[in-house]
Length: 432
Image 1 (cartoon, one colour):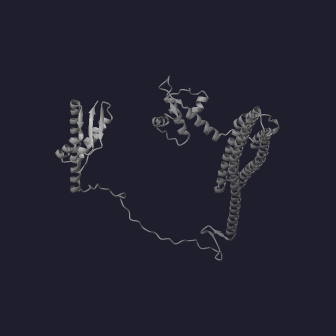
Image 2: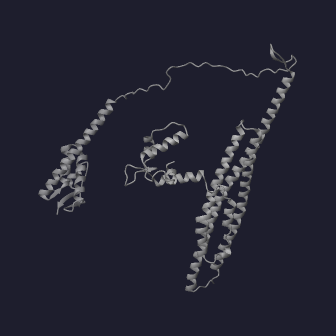
Image 3: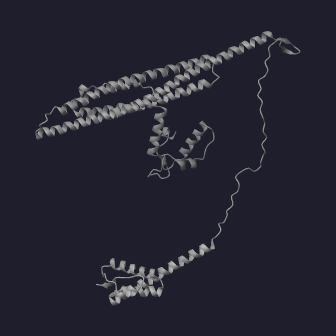
């Protein structure tokens, strides 16, 4: 409604909150009569459908997405191709003649301007409009199947009009398939023309002929590419035409259903009239007792069906049971062991950092450390060989990443290491 008013210049391109509120009220009066909250609708439309203009922050404007969405709905509801003959569109496309193509540029122009950018788009849109038309016709037929209000004459008239329209559309679709075959033949001739040009050069080619052959091969490849795109287009067209034919066939079956319902309803009405006439002829009337039927009148028993009634217990409160939080039991032994492991690891990290800092200070003063002599002292004092290993690893990483230091390793195991559980090479860290 806003877009329509902007086009009719009833509302400015940059409209106000009051304009939105007015449109919402009018739309609500046309439908349910209940006016929704404008704030909630505006909040929902902002970002994708509405935006604030840069110059006027307190006004609103339709976004590009909203304009495209309105255009899509407009084409779907009021398609410009719905009444345009499909046969004429295909004839315009099939007017293409292979004799008019003298170069690959001519073929390119025909494809880009006449086919892809014009007739092809029109045909696809037109087929969608035709499908909407047939679906709408089927919906109308379904209404006629289930209705009882209209007279028989009016129903027959409406059904006959729909049948004529659907039959005409089906015949038009069949004709278009024949027209598309002629276009395919003409395009095949064009491709063969470029193939003959490519094969016309001799096998023993000069450099100039090789260059010409390369150009002809590219022209042929482009012609084959265009033919493939046209073939893919008609595969899609045939798919959509197949959908239309299926829907038209379904519409024909619905027409048969309408005819059967028409016959059955007519037969029921005729039999009811006969029964009423027979009953009135056999009945007698008295002021005291009204209409009376003779004793010999064949009165049928009323059709009945036995059933069983089950009474259900009524519960005033019926719903899901409450779920209670159950606190998990604590495994004290496991918890204590994990806390002990954590304390041991933290102590090990602290002692490792302490020894590393000590050796770094020592390097600054003495400029050299023989770590193989200190390893066993650390393990003995801390009563933990892993701390000594971590200290050695940290010092090696420190020296390796610092250009001021170098690591000197002699692959010789001292005699003092042979009596230990862990044997070490001689390793010195020297400050340059």
